[in-house]
Length: 80
Image 1 (cartoon, rainbow, N blue to C red):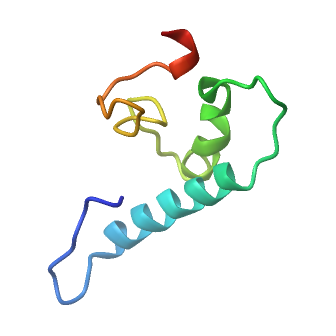
Image 2 (cartoon, rainbow, N blue to C red):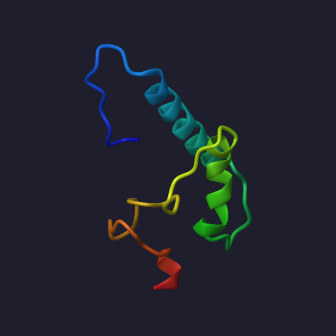
């Protein structure tokens, strides 16, 4: 979401819907309260709910592309 730019005068409605669902997913995760010791992979479903409600999914982990070492596929730091 943060690396995508639309140069069209008016974005396609589907494009807007996808960005809105991704924003909702970010907000859902950011406002979720969870106990200490919870691994990121355990929160993956929380983040996907907004998209699942509309029949969408994505084929990678929720933390894809965001990591301590900035690798595309990266396990939580505690597992290294």
